Length: 218
Ligand SMILES: C[S@@+](CC[C@H](N)C(=O)[O-])C[C@H]1O[C@@H](n2cnc3c(N)ncnc32)[C@H](O)[C@@H]1O
Image 1 (tube, protein in one colour):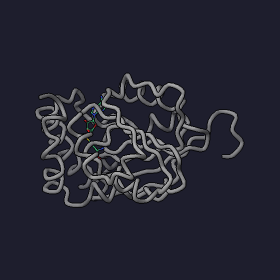
Image 2 (image 1 turned 30 degrees about the vertical axis):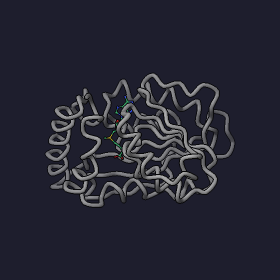
Image 3 (image 1 turned 90 degrees about the horizontal axis):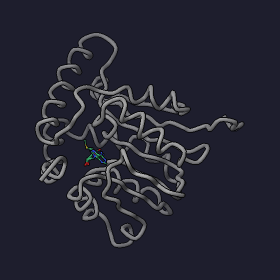
Image 4 (image 1 turned 180 degrees about the vertical axis):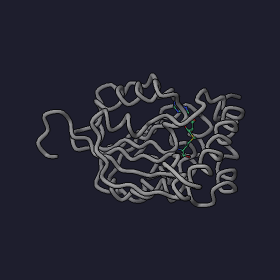
């Protein structure tokens, strides 16, 4: 068994031991922004705790959920009612090569996902997926972060380094350090609407809006 399949069954318990409810608060901080959405793409949603919150919050949403781990997708499916599963398409695929075809979305969601990749892969994922986000669409984001200064920065550097060592061992992660994901999103044309920090800045959650080139609704 490889990658995140290996740790799917224990993922939630490990998270609760390490962070309590901090990660789930970050995942769901801006889920209400998606209430009016019809089509949402989630990348690397894992065991489905964000997915469940989204389907509960947005009665008309249809979700396309892409994750490379079949075990994570199975856990996610197990959280949902039959009615919710009917509003969902699962794709077990590598997001670095995933092609949504003709599909477009009102929102894209990456929760503790972009930090699995080296910078070049984050750039490739963003540039491949962004053309499928409708003008004015949202990108919900949460990840670990390193605050700019002080004791919080030192604490975060130790915590993030330990996390990467753990995930490189258990999930065969290639990345060794946090990629500059929010800078990449901003360079691609996304503007931050709101953001929140948890655990003294170790965890960040943000909602971005996409104003495509030539759009006048900024
Ligand atoms: C750190 S976990 C985060 C899971 C969940 N989003 C959360 O908030 O906890 C990363 C997730 O991304 C998935 N993943 C990792 N690399 C991937 C890839 N190349 N393509 C698609 N999914 C991937 C893993 O299977 C896992 O479910």
